[in-house]
Length: 170
Image (cartoon, rainbow, N blue to C red; front, side, top):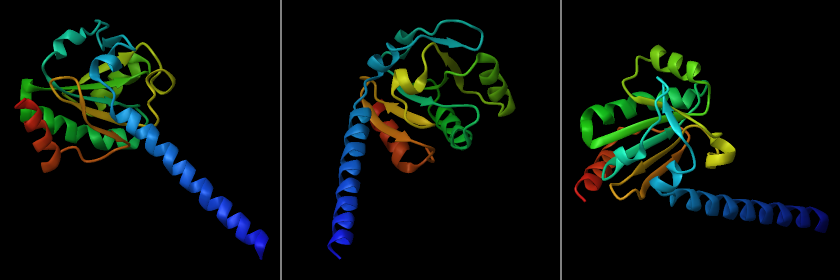
């Protein structure tokens, strides 16, 4: 009986420690600044032009790190497009992948997306600390993280719309 009890206590302890580590990692990711994040990579659009991050100064920005094979990335994209259409030039949405440009182009064409797609010069997982796809950030005008979500969610919700509106009002 005491061996079973020791195993059970050890398992509970392992789950608690694992949960704490995951919480700390997510909290660290949630404090990422836009400028710091973009300084870790060079982005090129699908025509091969280098992205100038200064164009994002004083703007509300959504960045979605995605992969073309990712089902949640596909599900998330229409909601991000609806947000872009709702807020127009007040909101920038950047779809970023480290996959080859031809795959990103096919993905964009397949879904007839009006979003801006970019190729990252560095690998998303090891170099930008992306742990799962999609990893999506909402940054306010100051480049501070307002929302960070790992894996797909519905981005077109009253709560997120309010968060964008509040960020625009800053």
